[in-house]
Length: 343
Image 1 (spheres, rainbow, N blue to C red):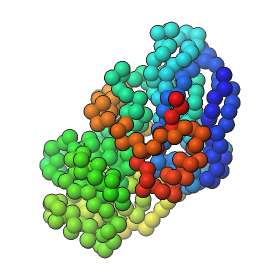
Image 2: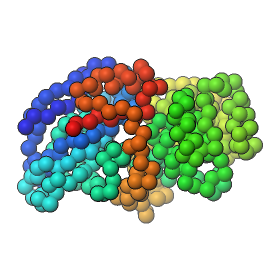
Image 3: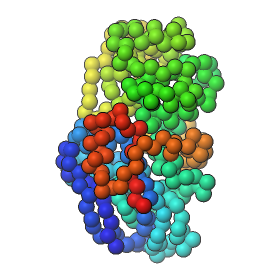
Image 4: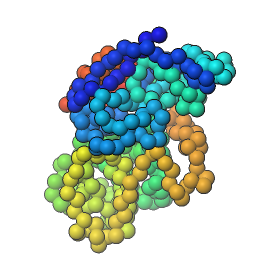
């Protein structure tokens, strides 16, 4: 059997290769992919060659071994169906819908322990957002929002919107979203945000905070800020809108992108805490009671509740991958979520 796989050959050069598909060995299964989700921020940076050097593709995913060094394969959101079982795998697995953290490919063979069975009630279109929703759940768990707090989210891409969807279920005192694109801001408002602004319209120091305060942000400033825009310059605005003893969660992966951060003023005197949040692990304060499996159960529940598959803006066959990536990096305002389809 042949399969098609996406390979990053060099900067702005990708190729769809046809190769033999490995047959499933002992305790392995062959999966035919239905959808694979594209992470606009991460995969856009990879397409542009902005990934840091001498770093693993992903130390926690078996399918992403190796380093960021051309040529390489990437992707981590495949929804498919088991079409063949290897030795030691019960035939009951045949036909099961599963999720796998695997690069973009029409078929793939992995060990059974790398597959996540999907609930029958969960649509394929929603299941493809499993990594995004798990990341959003992780952000909320790391940020620990409290009743009545003022919370802001910078960056309303898919992960930012899903984070807003979760925060909108909390009894917060104020929830604000910030993004360059109006249609994303409108979705945030639909999800329960009190205000959604374009941060680029407030370049002067203090102007963004004043605009937020006029919309209901307490004079004390934000208690909790999520920086999810992928733009390191946004950290300065995050500091600006924070209050005393507040906290900033950095969920963005900036790759090689850098920016000067002003740590000499409000940051220093306001005792602001900045911490990174990354979905591969669970916060040490939760690990005694939370496992990855328990977190996935919460993710499935939220995927069925939020139904992010309704936000898919573009469906492309894998053969048109070059067009997809050009669109992601050259016209990001036109794409909310792009997904490869293999049907």
